[in-house]
Amino acid sequence: MALFFIDACYEVNMLERFKLGQIVNAVGLKGENRVYPYTDYKERFEELDSLYIEDTVYEIEKVRYMGEMAIVRFKGISDRNAAEALKGKYLYIDRKNARQLGEDEYFIPDLMGMEVATEEDEALGVLSDVIQGTAQDVYEVQCPDGKKFLIPAVGEFILKVDTLNRKITVRLIEGMMD
Image (cartoon, rainbow, N blue to C red; front, side, top):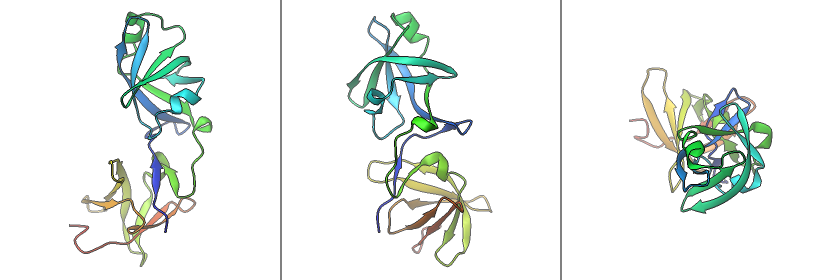
């Protein structure tokens, strides 16, 4: 059984765009922005020619890295004041420009709201969040009574993800729903 890995592009804007990151600050005096990536593959910024900041398309001029942050310079943003004006804004890409996923990989927005059921087909609730961790992701399931519980997103517990029928089949262990 393969593990279930998820691309970290986390949120969908109008179901056609993925949120790729957030501008957290300006860097230097030449219009560069420090970007917190929402993808597990930060080098993705190097592969793109442009992206959206809100509803405006910006061409990427240069990308470098500082630790886990991407430092991005956009065409037309040539000084610190212009870069600071973008602070706090989100970066999006069109779904059609998202990277190709392998087998057992899913975009988080495609999983949200899926029905979660046991291998005996007992309905448990819906997937309400994916918490990304360093070891593995964890799925948060919202039960009909409002309670929530967590399931590690590993093959031992996540048996099947059926995107066509929007259903995740899981194996629970004692105490998991407590």
